[in-house]
Length: 328
Image (tube, rainbow, N blue to C red; front, side):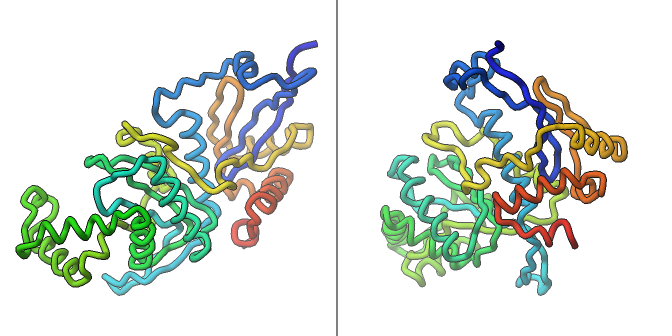
């Protein structure tokens, strides 16, 4: 008897259908290392975002965009409203990093994620850790809610000061400007004199207790948002020397099997009719084939069996309201 049997299956996602083989082990499932040896799986990540991690990040971002509802916010600068799906948040340390990367993620980032889930109803998010040029760790967070910038800054500064980062910033600013305003000449190329004066007056007014440690903007007006965000979140340029995890997300986005079906005659007929009708782009790998689709294809009566499987997955995995996507 062979050590394993391959069962033809299909997984359904918002932008693709994956046709692959599920492994059925006989008579038992071997250890992970043994399975990897039998299937020729490589584990060489070379200290960077691995190929597997890139795929997971890309998939998580695709689902973030798919699940997020369109939202409208007033543009106070131009007096117009604009729409967006996701918010892109940057969190930096107010002063020089003095704690290990792992401790910052454990005590600061984790608390921030817990609080935005509780306070703003954030359900889906993805974070990415990077090193700044000055060596400080900072985070990017992609989430499905917009948080007012002042509340975001106050919340992150309060959390950072658990480890004394705002207090150290205040002490540094008081010492630097002890004799009055002092220009930072080395920053004039990117931070002009008038802007430095304005920042000084603001900082002095609040006794340097509200450092500019955060940034938030909506993700919109990008032709291919998913590709842009995936490229940004998987780059390796600023991971040198970073310890611990490079990225993370909420549990539902960490494991996204999609709608699952064993390929029998009914599934095969439905898939073949869909392919013949739309001729979607195809990518074939050694162990799988991927057909790139869109929601209109899934809404087609020919794809009814696929849509039902995908819908059941969304309800069970994300408690998702299908009305907004499939039945408008």
